[in-house]
Image (spheres, rainbow over the protein chains, first blue to last red):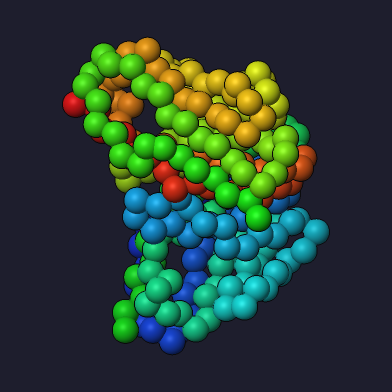
Length: 115
Length: 114
């Protein structure tokens, strides 16, 4: 059973526009959420995180929104740049419960930013 | 600053051969260490984690094993590789309480089993 879902395998956006990447989760024990960016043949790079006590966290062009009632989070990239083209992974964890502190990853969304 | 190294970067091995992948972390003490695998077109699957020397937890039953002989060294091994072991292997580290910490990944090892 997939606890973290990224339902869009790919997303194409024009340079300068907003990219919105979505992620849904099912485990109500998750209270820490992260986004990673991954280029081919490289390890994932940490982008931004948010804990469940917040509903928004911003870092430069990247903003993560958390809607706990809907069990949904999103990553907004504004403005999008061609260098943002990569696979984006959503991840979640809980300090206790079935996942026992492990990071649970979604399957990723491939973002393509067109010049 | 902290850095994480993995080697080799790429490995091609025949079915039935042994495997040893190494991961080392610099610039931190007593990190939590992780091994993940990313199979083609799939997400990241946690294989093993370690919260200290000699302490290994396995998440997925398989023919792989892990060891942590030193504080900042994590090794992934197999006695006999299977075709299904092909994939991209990632090591990661973190500090702090598990479940509320950020994990940082190494560059990965691409393994192809033929």
